[in-house]
Length: 216
Image 1 (tube, rainbow, N blue to C red):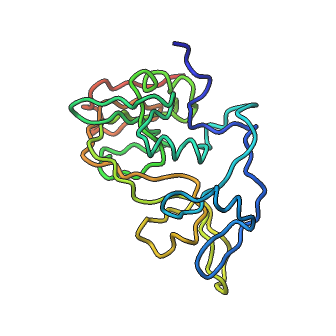
Image 2: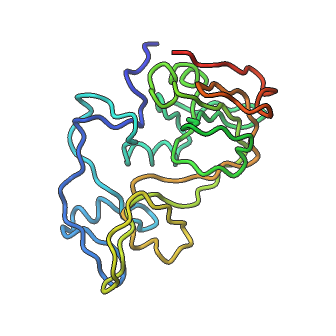
Protein backbone atom coordinates (compact mmCIF):
# COMPACT_ATOMS: atom_id res chain seq x y z
CA UNK A 1 0.00 0.00 0.00
CA UNK A 2 1.29 3.47 -0.89
CA UNK A 3 2.00 5.62 2.15
CA UNK A 4 -0.07 8.82 2.36
CA UNK A 5 1.87 12.03 1.69
CA UNK A 6 0.88 13.43 5.08
CA UNK A 7 -1.09 12.08 8.05
CA UNK A 8 -4.87 12.07 7.69
CA UNK A 9 -5.37 14.59 10.52
CA UNK A 10 -2.82 17.09 9.19
CA UNK A 11 -4.08 20.39 7.76
CA UNK A 12 -2.89 21.68 4.39
CA UNK A 13 -2.12 25.25 3.38
CA UNK A 14 -5.05 25.04 0.94
CA UNK A 15 -7.47 24.55 3.85
CA UNK A 16 -8.37 27.85 5.49
CA UNK A 17 -10.64 28.80 8.35
CA UNK A 18 -14.00 29.92 7.00
CA UNK A 19 -14.47 33.70 7.41
CA UNK A 20 -17.71 33.41 9.35
CA UNK A 21 -18.54 35.87 12.13
CA UNK A 22 -18.91 34.62 15.69
CA UNK A 23 -21.23 36.24 18.21
CA UNK A 24 -20.96 36.07 22.00
CA UNK A 25 -24.38 35.76 23.65
CA UNK A 26 -25.37 35.26 27.27
CA UNK A 27 -25.89 31.55 26.53
CA UNK A 28 -22.65 31.00 24.62
CA UNK A 29 -20.99 31.28 21.25
CA UNK A 30 -22.90 31.33 17.96
CA UNK A 31 -22.06 31.75 14.31
CA UNK A 32 -23.94 34.76 12.95
CA UNK A 33 -25.14 32.72 9.99
CA UNK A 34 -27.66 30.09 11.19
CA UNK A 35 -26.60 27.61 8.49
CA UNK A 36 -22.97 27.76 9.60
CA UNK A 37 -24.06 27.58 13.23
CA UNK A 38 -25.96 24.35 12.61
CA UNK A 39 -23.04 22.94 10.61
CA UNK A 40 -20.56 23.80 13.37
CA UNK A 41 -22.41 22.10 16.26
CA UNK A 42 -21.55 18.61 17.45
CA UNK A 43 -24.03 16.26 19.14
CA UNK A 44 -23.26 17.86 22.53
CA UNK A 45 -23.97 21.36 21.22
CA UNK A 46 -20.32 22.47 21.24
CA UNK A 47 -19.46 24.98 18.51
CA UNK A 48 -16.52 24.00 16.28
CA UNK A 49 -14.17 25.92 14.02
CA UNK A 50 -15.10 25.48 10.35
CA UNK A 51 -12.57 25.02 7.58
CA UNK A 52 -12.94 25.37 3.83
CA UNK A 53 -10.72 24.82 0.81
CA UNK A 54 -9.05 21.60 -0.27
CA UNK A 55 -6.14 19.45 0.89
CA UNK A 56 -3.69 21.10 -1.51
CA UNK A 57 -0.48 23.05 -1.17
CA UNK A 58 1.82 21.96 1.66
CA UNK A 59 0.97 19.94 4.78
CA UNK A 60 1.08 22.00 7.98
CA UNK A 61 2.25 19.40 10.48
CA UNK A 62 1.80 21.78 13.42
CA UNK A 63 -1.94 22.14 12.72
CA UNK A 64 -4.48 19.32 13.01
CA UNK A 65 -7.58 19.73 10.84
CA UNK A 66 -10.53 20.18 13.25
CA UNK A 67 -13.04 17.97 11.44
CA UNK A 68 -10.63 15.13 10.63
CA UNK A 69 -9.07 15.25 14.11
CA UNK A 70 -12.46 15.03 15.79
CA UNK A 71 -13.55 12.23 13.45
CA UNK A 72 -10.44 10.18 14.23
CA UNK A 73 -10.76 10.78 17.99
CA UNK A 74 -14.44 9.82 18.05
CA UNK A 75 -13.96 6.65 15.99
CA UNK A 76 -10.54 5.59 17.31
CA UNK A 77 -9.23 5.65 13.77
CA UNK A 78 -5.58 6.07 12.87
CA UNK A 79 -4.21 9.62 12.78
CA UNK A 80 -2.05 8.63 9.84
CA UNK A 81 -4.31 6.73 7.43
CA UNK A 82 -7.81 6.87 8.98
CA UNK A 83 -7.92 3.08 9.18
CA UNK A 84 -8.63 1.19 12.41
CA UNK A 85 -6.15 1.87 15.21
CA UNK A 86 -4.13 -1.16 16.30
CA UNK A 87 -5.06 -3.02 19.49
CA UNK A 88 -3.49 -5.85 21.42
CA UNK A 89 -3.62 -7.17 24.98
CA UNK A 90 -1.88 -4.05 26.29
CA UNK A 91 -4.37 -1.69 24.68
CA UNK A 92 -4.54 0.67 21.72
CA UNK A 93 -1.49 2.02 19.91
CA UNK A 94 -0.64 5.71 20.44
CA UNK A 95 2.28 7.73 19.04
CA UNK A 96 3.05 11.09 20.69
CA UNK A 97 5.76 13.71 20.12
CA UNK A 98 8.12 14.48 22.97
CA UNK A 99 8.13 18.20 22.09
CA UNK A 100 11.48 18.81 23.72
CA UNK A 101 10.54 17.19 27.04
CA UNK A 102 11.14 13.62 28.14
CA UNK A 103 9.01 12.23 30.91
CA UNK A 104 8.91 8.77 32.44
CA UNK A 105 5.22 9.07 33.29
CA UNK A 106 2.64 9.04 30.51
CA UNK A 107 -0.22 8.05 32.79
CA UNK A 108 -3.01 10.61 32.57
CA UNK A 109 -1.46 12.55 29.69
CA UNK A 110 -4.03 14.70 27.87
CA UNK A 111 -3.67 14.70 24.10
CA UNK A 112 -5.29 15.99 20.92
CA UNK A 113 -3.50 13.36 18.82
CA UNK A 114 -5.62 10.34 17.79
CA UNK A 115 -4.33 6.76 18.03
CA UNK A 116 -2.43 4.97 15.28
CA UNK A 117 -2.15 1.71 13.41
CA UNK A 118 1.09 -0.30 13.47
CA UNK A 119 2.12 0.69 9.94
CA UNK A 120 1.65 4.41 10.54
CA UNK A 121 3.41 4.20 13.91
CA UNK A 122 6.49 3.07 11.97
CA UNK A 123 6.07 5.42 8.99
CA UNK A 124 4.86 8.67 10.58
CA UNK A 125 8.21 9.71 12.11
CA UNK A 126 9.67 9.75 8.59
CA UNK A 127 7.01 12.22 7.45
CA UNK A 128 6.33 14.42 10.47
CA UNK A 129 9.08 16.87 11.58
CA UNK A 130 7.76 17.01 15.16
CA UNK A 131 7.94 13.22 15.52
CA UNK A 132 11.47 13.17 14.08
CA UNK A 133 12.54 15.39 17.00
CA UNK A 134 11.46 12.64 19.38
CA UNK A 135 8.43 10.52 20.12
CA UNK A 136 7.06 7.86 22.42
CA UNK A 137 5.04 4.79 21.46
CA UNK A 138 2.40 3.76 23.97
CA UNK A 139 -0.23 1.10 24.51
CA UNK A 140 -3.31 2.57 26.14
CA UNK A 141 -6.16 0.66 27.78
CA UNK A 142 -8.39 3.68 28.50
CA UNK A 143 -8.73 6.95 26.58
CA UNK A 144 -11.46 9.03 28.18
CA UNK A 145 -12.86 12.04 26.27
CA UNK A 146 -12.46 14.94 28.70
CA UNK A 147 -12.99 18.14 26.71
CA UNK A 148 -11.87 20.28 23.80
CA UNK A 149 -9.10 22.73 22.97
CA UNK A 150 -10.05 25.93 21.22
CA UNK A 151 -10.60 29.66 21.58
CA UNK A 152 -12.33 30.62 24.84
CA UNK A 153 -14.28 33.90 24.68
CA UNK A 154 -15.13 36.13 27.67
CA UNK A 155 -18.79 36.36 28.55
CA UNK A 156 -20.72 39.47 27.47
CA UNK A 157 -19.60 42.46 29.51
CA UNK A 158 -16.51 40.74 30.87
CA UNK A 159 -13.10 42.31 30.15
CA UNK A 160 -10.30 40.54 28.36
CA UNK A 161 -9.49 39.11 24.96
CA UNK A 162 -10.32 35.64 23.62
CA UNK A 163 -7.87 32.99 24.86
CA UNK A 164 -6.62 30.76 22.03
CA UNK A 165 -5.61 27.12 22.49
CA UNK A 166 -7.39 26.71 25.84
CA UNK A 167 -8.40 23.36 27.32
CA UNK A 168 -12.08 23.42 28.34
CA UNK A 169 -13.45 20.33 30.10
CA UNK A 170 -16.86 18.93 29.26
CA UNK A 171 -18.12 19.63 32.79
CA UNK A 172 -16.87 23.23 32.77
CA UNK A 173 -19.33 26.18 32.76
CA UNK A 174 -17.01 27.70 30.13
CA UNK A 175 -17.91 25.05 27.53
CA UNK A 176 -20.62 27.12 25.77
CA UNK A 177 -18.11 29.97 25.34
CA UNK A 178 -15.46 28.04 23.42
CA UNK A 179 -15.08 27.60 19.68
CA UNK A 180 -13.50 24.16 19.64
CA UNK A 181 -10.65 23.15 17.40
CA UNK A 182 -9.57 19.74 18.74
CA UNK A 183 -11.05 16.96 20.85
CA UNK A 184 -9.02 15.92 23.91
CA UNK A 185 -8.66 12.48 25.46
CA UNK A 186 -6.90 11.53 28.68
CA UNK A 187 -4.78 8.39 28.33
CA UNK A 188 -4.87 5.96 31.24
CA UNK A 189 -3.45 2.54 32.07
CA UNK A 190 -0.59 3.24 29.70
CA UNK A 191 2.39 1.08 28.80
CA UNK A 192 5.50 2.63 27.24
CA UNK A 193 6.62 0.53 24.26
CA UNK A 194 9.50 2.64 22.94
CA UNK A 195 11.20 6.03 22.97
CA UNK A 196 12.95 7.67 20.06
CA UNK A 197 14.64 10.92 21.02
CA UNK A 198 17.00 13.48 19.53
CA UNK A 199 17.68 14.87 23.01
CA UNK A 200 19.54 13.13 25.86
CA UNK A 201 17.31 10.85 27.89
CA UNK A 202 17.43 10.75 31.70
CA UNK A 203 18.82 7.58 33.23
CA UNK A 204 15.34 6.47 34.31
CA UNK A 205 14.28 6.29 30.64
CA UNK A 206 17.15 4.11 29.48
CA UNK A 207 15.54 0.86 30.53
CA UNK A 208 12.63 1.39 28.16
CA UNK A 209 12.53 -1.38 25.50
CA UNK A 210 13.66 -0.57 21.95
CA UNK A 211 15.37 2.67 22.96
CA UNK A 212 16.69 4.47 19.87
CA UNK A 213 18.28 7.82 19.13
CA UNK A 214 17.23 9.95 16.18
CA UNK A 215 20.25 11.39 14.42
CA UNK A 216 18.67 12.89 11.29
